[in-house]
Amino acid sequence: MALDLDSIRRSILSLVYEYLGRTGVLFMEFLGNCVIALLILIIGFKLSNYVVKLCKKVFERSKMDLMIQTFLLSAMRIGLKILVVFIAIQQVGVQASSIIAVIGSAGLAVGLSLQGSLANIAGGVLLLVVKPFQVGDYILEESSGKEGTVQSIGIMYTKLSSMDNKAILIPNGNLSNATITNVTNQDKRRVDLLIGIEYSEDIKKVKDILSEVIESETVLLKDDPVKIYVSEFKESCIDIGIRYWVKTEDYWDSRWRVLEKIKYAFDEADVTIPFNQLDVNVISQK
Image: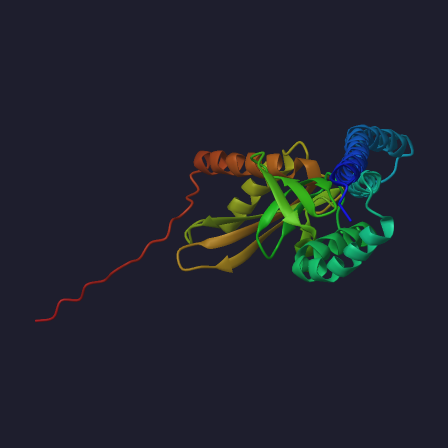
């Protein structure tokens, strides 16, 4: 029986055309889904930023604690963007169950590799609950020696501004496990000074001079006691201690001003501030 080559050829061509038609349709569908996913990303990110700004205004009007505001806004910004990406991936054709399965299987590995980051997130939550400091407080982190004014508390890091206006980022995990000194937590602060004088000086005279200087300080809190006392006998001097109270915001200006006034007062009264010295006696032997 002779083969009908013409019919075979037509059958093969029809199969090829049908396959190419289906492939083209699928490709166009995929391309359209990619375009829609891209639009979802662009519009979704803009909407998420708008929602964050709107929530920020609501938080400010409700007078919510600034620490909680910054933390919630940071978490909300990240969470909304993750949601937008999730929706865009679904639009491309990836099933939600597949995404969840991949996230679940990768979660353990990522969690182990990002233990420090997870500790920072947990530390941020702990800082919000315990509230050892607030935005605007001046703190000192003892383990690293970093200090500055708290600017914001994010989901991962706390931002400080140093006295010379440097930005310092400290991981929340470190802060939650460290000893923190909150310098500005109280309304008032005690100024402690140690002034060295020579052993030949009249202690009573020196104390009277120091008392006049402290009493003339404009930001001195009159209701709190002023202490002027002999602190210690050292090798080359006698240390006179001074303690007085000022408002927290006046601390540094008052300290610097009083030290300058003491130097001028000592110069006027011929009181000597000694420096470390060593007397060497040479004994000659015949």
